[in-house]
Length: 320
Image (cartoon, rainbow, N blue to C red):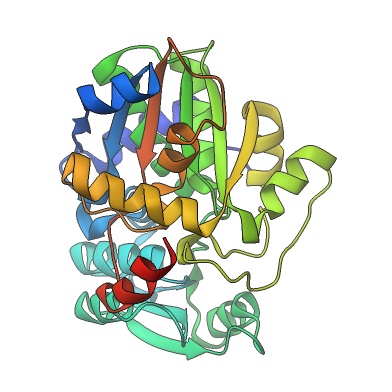
């Protein structure tokens, strides 16, 4: 295994320049007064494809050999990585097969199809997406690009934190949503290089707390198909790359329950006028709900995505 370094993140930043958006940073005096800290929200909900995932996807696909590009790639994802691979493949003219759960949010499935991805649907409760991906890679000579456990993916995701710190200066805390740990790993590597005193906090949904349990026990823990509104964080475990990086570079982990997550998501919509999906609001929920003692500090928050399934709105409003 090749572990990514900050040099790889720097290389990824050059690789994706002109393809990925340099996303803005939002602030709110009202939020700062409420929390007693300076908060800086990195708006990856405004990234191409609606999430940070485009960074890693473009970085990985753009580094394929000519033969690999011609044959194409396969990946597995509940939504945002699927969209990102489909979009990056469209930009780079790389055929792409996307293994998606049949219950993925419709908005993410339709966007993936709209970007030209070939969808293969599976049953989350009965089938193993990774095995399907490996089988398709073997049968069709495709390059497998996993959603988080890949050095180029991690390096690409780390460019978001690199941009944030370069734009606003050193931070005391950085709150990062965590599913499989690609964004969290890349963010932690970038923060360690650019702001060594910054405490990076990974945030998961309470129902899918495998990374938190892994962090506490120092042993890789798993979870099966957790029931949470944070569909982008329903991953079974950290990966072979992301687990050791999280152990080495992340200061702490936190979890938030679904009602807290939804309350925060709607607050961001109303206060910042930013449409953020539930998974994208994980870091903000931990920061705004007092998961860490951040009063008097400078705090970064990654808003990781904004691909909202509006058909879920009535249910979300009922349960927030």
